Amino acid sequence: SSLTIIGNPQNALIASIAPGITFLGFARTMFLPVLVGLALNTLYLLLWFWRDLVFENIADVGGTESIEPDPEVTMNISAVKVKCMWRVYTGAVVAVVTAMVTGWAFSMATDDVALAAGSTLMLVRAIRRRVAGDGSQTETEFALGAIDYSILILFIGQFILVGATVDTGLPQKAFQGILGPCSSDLAAGPGCLLWFSAVVLLLSNLISNVPVILMLQPLLSTQPESTVTGVWMLCAWVATVSGNLTMLGSAANLIVAHAAEREGEPGFTATSFSKFAMVPTLLVTALGVFLMPPVGPDWAWTLAVATTLLALLSATFWYCCRRMRPSSFWGASFHSREALGLFLLSLLSAG
Image 1 (cartoon, rainbow, N blue to C red):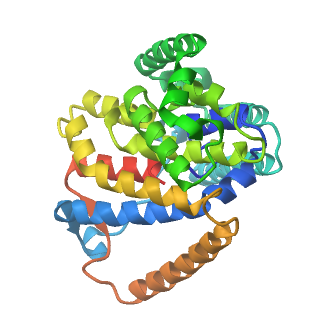
Image 2: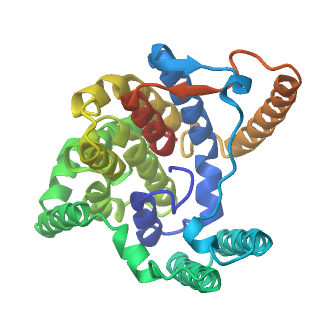
C-alpha cells in the first residue's frame, strides 16, 4: 500500500496537503523501497510459517473449478447469454479501472477521478443486474452493507481527539523539543532523517498512522521548500510500514482484527502479531529510509523496474518449466488461519 497515493488513507491525506506530490512521482520514489520490503517480508513470512505450510501436488487436488454465476441470476437466461453478459461486464470493469488509473497518472484530481469511476462502476453493475433479472440487492444496499460502522465510529473519535490536540499547538512544540536542531530541516542529514523516522514509527503505534500525519502537518509545513516533498514522502513510507509493528499501528490491522474476532478466530491477537512483525518492520523501515530520496539516489527507481522485469521473466520461465514437469511442491495452502491472516495482512500493508 506504500506504492501509490491511493494505496492507503495516510498516503491520500499526504498527497492532498503536501506540495509537489504527483501520482507517478510518488510511485517512482516508492518503487525500490516497496520492492525490497515486499521481498524481505515474503522471505520472513515463509521462514516464520514454514511449519504451517502444506504442499500439495496440483494434480492431486483436481485442478481449479471455474466460478459459475449465481443460479438465481441465470435461472431464466440461456448459458450463452450469461457467458456473454459476464464477459461484457468484466470488460467494462477493467476499462473503468484502467481509465481511473490513467487519469491519476496524468495528474487529474484524485477525488474527482475516484468519484467518477465509482459512479460509473455502480451504473455498470446496475445495468448488469437489470439485464440478468436479479432484483435481490440494489447498488446502494450493496455499498452500504459493506460499511463497518463500528470502525468508522472509532476513527471519528480518534480524529476529533487528534484535531483538538493539534489546535492547542502543543504537538508542534513537543516535536521541536524532541527533534532539536533537526526540526528546522529534517533533511539536513541521515541522522536527522533516522531520528525523525523513529519518532514517526513510535507515534504511529501509539495513536495510529493516519492521526500522526495530521499531528505532523504544522511541523512539516515549516520545512525548506527544496526538501519538503521528500520529507513528506519519507513520512508516508515510515507511517505506512511502521503500521506493521503493532495492532494499533494501522487501520488495516484494526479492520482485520475486528473481522477475525467476528469470525471467532482466537489466534489473531496483538501479542501474536507483534511477536512476528517486530524484526521485519524495523528492518524494512530503515532500509526504505536509505533507499529513497533525499538519502537514496534519484535513479533508484530504474533499478527497481529492471529488477521487477527480471523477476517476472524468471517467474514466467519457472512456471513454464513447472507446467511441463509437475512437482510435489507445486501449490501451497495454509492450515493455520492465524498464519493466513498475518500473511495476507503483511503482503497488503508491508510493501
